[in-house]
Amino acid sequence: MRRLLLLGIAGLFAQLVDGSLGMSYGVSSTTLLLAFGVAPALASASVHISEVATTFASGVSHTRFGNVDWSKVIWMALPGAVGAFLGAVAISYIAVEVAEPVVAVFLFLLGVYILARFGFRRKDRVVEVRPIARRFLVPLGFVAGFLDAAGGGGWGPIGSSTLLSSGRMEPRKVVGTVDTSEFIVTVAGAFGFLLSLSLSEIPWQVVGALLVGGIVAAPIAAWLVRLLPARVMGVLVAGIILVTNAQTFLDAVGLGSLVSNVIYAAIVVVCLAAIGFAIWTLREQKKAEGEPA
Image 1 (spheres, rainbow, N blue to C red):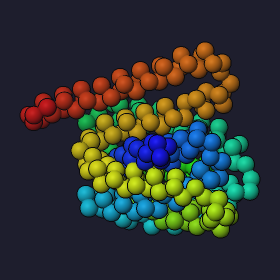
Image 2: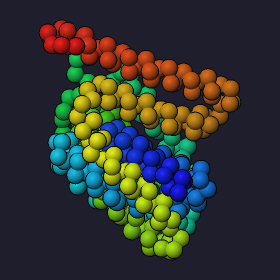
Image 3: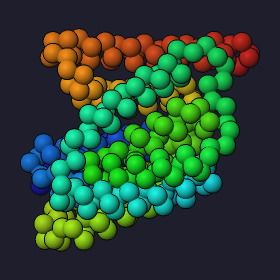
Image 4: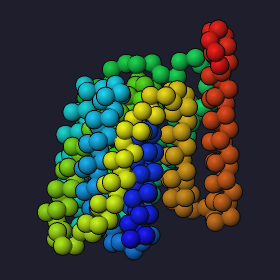
């Protein structure tokens, strides 16, 4: 019972982060299940089945608060669903760990760029809303969907961070759009797992605990995302990307444990400094415009 309660609380906090920053539900939940000794395929399956309900609740909540750009949802969701189905089948039969260092390096470098763009630029407007081509959204959705199902998480980190780095969408629209389209992706991934695995193998109590926690947190997260300024949201997203991918990135480039620990600590300090600088910049802009800080 204690284990299920902990999983429910973990699902709640994971959805709070995912619903407000557009990532981390799958990664954090899968990591926790692996720590409890659940097999990788079953851990990913449990997370994706629970996400069918949590992503639906998140999508409805984001829609109610006006955080969704529907013109982009379908062009990410459908190829993402195809990728998720193939990824679910792949992890049930083959090992996909070889892709982890490559993805971690890509996300880490993307996180550095987002942090620089939103955290340390004095430019008044860090986002200039412009169209995004479908030929960009389709492959992005497919790759993010495949890695999400195969690795237990990846739709949010890859989808949100890539769209955010373009500077063509408001951060809240990025989060709402990615979270809403994730429902279709998750359904496809869950269907792939159900075809590849026996129903008796899936730990349904674990699925239920994660599901309940996520549903409770979904509307709160969608409300929070409206309150966060674009600069602060961008820095928080970059921080999550850097912290969660730093260790794999540092291992991939072959650095020793001591050097890696020092760099990891430096990353945390820089992220905190970026948050402080972003808040200070916003206060200065408010003062210049004659508004309350």
